[in-house]
Image (cartoon, rainbow over all chains, first blue to last red; front, side, top):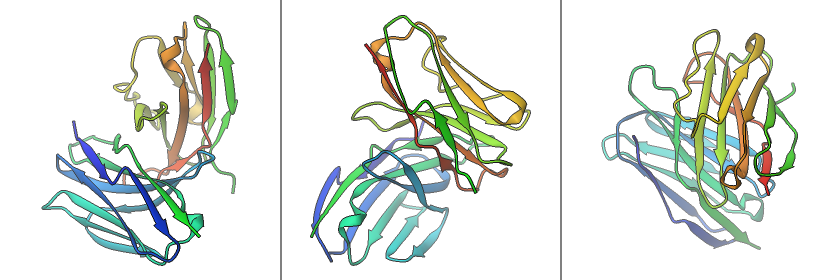
Length: 111
Length: 114
């Protein structure tokens, strides 16, 4: 079973700061997801990636398959970015379709 | 179009009672997942449905938990003889066919067992 670790657990930033959230996993995967969960509880999928880098607006996600590590970056952070960010991985085994989740990183962006 | 919907949004029950939680996936999505998020814990996979295939029940924590998906659409998660440790937010997600497609999450049902 894959072990997914996220760091930091909690992060407080000033508005405008560049933010990095890290995710590492223990077993080879076929895909990694970054999810965002707002205080109301709703979960939104931000990225799904299996290699390289993806960018959407101020969000950038990178993954290094050899090092079993991914990062989520937020440029020019804003209070509305305050949320819990969750990393989830899909194992590469045949027929594997369940996700294993990290415990999340709680981000608070202060004006 | 409409997203994934779940009902009820909140459920309070007494220990020992049975509860049913409902998920309406996005129309046309063939895959459906149930997850549980306990207070202070990460998301935990419970069960997965894909089309007409046998579901993957490997994440169900005990035989008190069961789920059905009728007609390849609506799903019901049933918890029998609820225990206090069953208190959690139960989330449903659906995706189009193809395991590399994005999952869309519902708002969840917050279950409280007294």
